Image 1: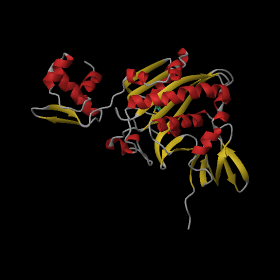
Image 2: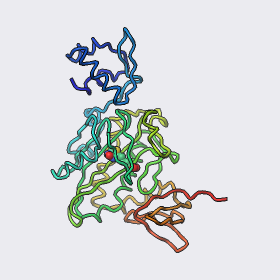
Image 3: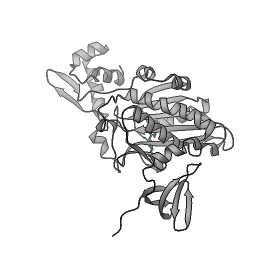
Image 4: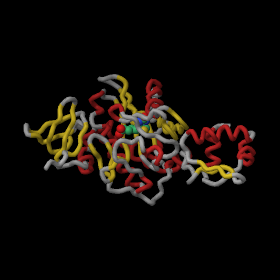
Length: 324
Ligand code: BTN
């Protein structure tokens, strides 16, 4: 009996006795008890009451591949080659990258939990079990590394559009690709590239979306954050949200391959949380002060500085602190 099948039985949030679970899953009570210990180790909040059995507090919203497929648009369905729903993995980006050598364009990997979820700039991405979305898509572009310029920004636009379809409005972007709601981070994008700098290259597009962050996992996050369930009463089942993400992302990847970032630049600018504001860019050892003007066709940020308009293709931007 797998841990996953036990979790499916417990996902309704009701009490189940060890006997009942054993009978349903065809194993002994001792086997159930051993697996229940692992449920606790995953950080899933569980209550056990003598005479009643075991219950996952609030139930679990597990990912179900058929549910994801059922909500895919015809266009997305065409472009998705395979959806793999995994349990506990190190990082979905790592798993998707493994498929790059096999040429699996359109491979989609998602997991209930990541033990080594990767964020930008070497940070960790909080990835507790069954709570948020962790998604990686493998795609191929023909024109070498330069054809990928601005891709991570364009992906941010797809995430905003998917959230709007889920009833989450007023979402903004922070350069290059943080997805924010009222200046708190709701999602992040991490691209990893392999292949020919001049010819065909494979890209893993990793997206992490906070859906229902448990209190216990939130303590490790070192920046203001927000999750979907705390700002919408709409349907926020993860399988549905995943399909909505793919419905925006897959066609966007296709279009990006043909038209590049230019086709998304205006949309990105309209969503820019720092547009026209005084910001500070940490760029290597440099700290640059300027007004965030826009982004160019390569996705570089354009800052109006004392030396004129300057563009930067890396670094970390923040609002300029108010000085008195
Ligand atoms: C960021 O720091 O803003 C980027 C976060 C990206 C997280 C996602 S979760 C799915 C995929 N797998 C990873 O290990 N990271 C990305």
